Image 1 (tube, helix red, strand yellow):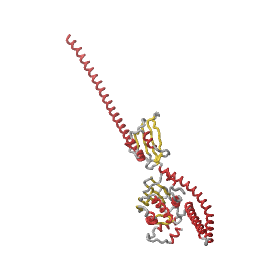
Image 2 (cartoon, one colour; image 1 turned 180 degrees about the horizontal axis):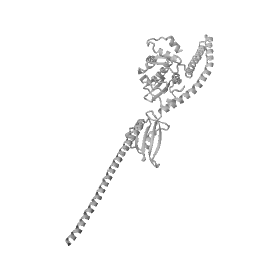
Image 3 (cartoon, rainbow, N blue to C red; image 1 turned 60 degrees about the vertical axis):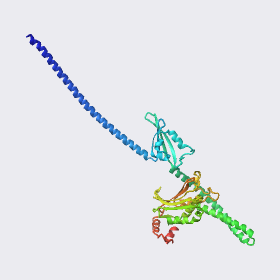
Image 4 (cartoon, rainbow, N blue to C red; image 1 turned 120 degrees about the horizontal axis):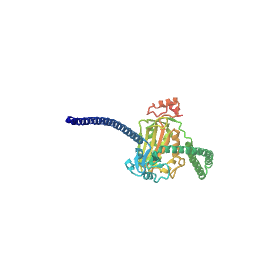
Length: 429
């Protein structure tokens, strides 16, 4: 009986132990299940986070590539320096404008780069050795807290703007001078006619006195010389380019070169004539255009006393206005060039760097080109040569529909026919 009593407590203890074990196993299983579920949730959250990071990274890379593409496509040069003034980034335009590779710019101090650009430049904007005119803009870069994080330097190519400003100033200056010169020419020409009249009367009255008649002849020659000068002045102030018609481009250039043969024979000048197939004809006043080209060619020859290369080109360029493509005629030499400080004045009347001459040649050239509704620019490098570039309308400018139709018909005239048709004479008048 006592043995049974002893076994029962042991059985109860074992039963409780199994029960506690089962409970602990259940709790452990529940904990394991909860941990597994949490791990699955964490895996899912991690996967979502990774996907979000990958998407953000992709967007960041796309934005980086987009910003880089925008930066590299800008015509404006961009230099970025960090807070320590070290260049960390620059674009292709900065490399092109400064003539320095990006690898050479990166790692340098921005202040040193800017100091080299501004060196030997007292005027602003800055004209680089390449002939490009630039303007610089410096801006501090700050973060959201306002802390300085770097410097942004923008290099603007203002060459075209500067050329337009110079052209406008030149036009205004020449217009004012033209009005003054025209008034003076008229005032001088009236009494000059009287002087010529009295000089001719003296020559007749002094037939029996050769010595005195020679004095009267000198007076008459001087009057004629002054009259030619006044005629040139009036051509400058009121250029007449009304006899417009189609002219074969290459023939026109060849005829002008023939007129300049004697001058070119004095030096070893190599002539090149290049006419674009897209410019078979020019709409111009033939006589006046020959005068323009001959003047430029003679200037080019004088700039090459030891010989050189004279190049005449005719090509088509995109128009800068709504009138469509334009024709560009260029007279280029390999001569002594024109100093930079006087290039803006070469078209001013009476301005000349020669010991002899009136300084009216290029002024008249400028007036005649503008009378053709065109423009002329000079590009020169001392010691390397000069190019005078004329830009003219490719088609008749400001003409009525009937006149344009007539001009188109004139294009069909046989190239070998040198005579003026009735229609051409009407157009010329």
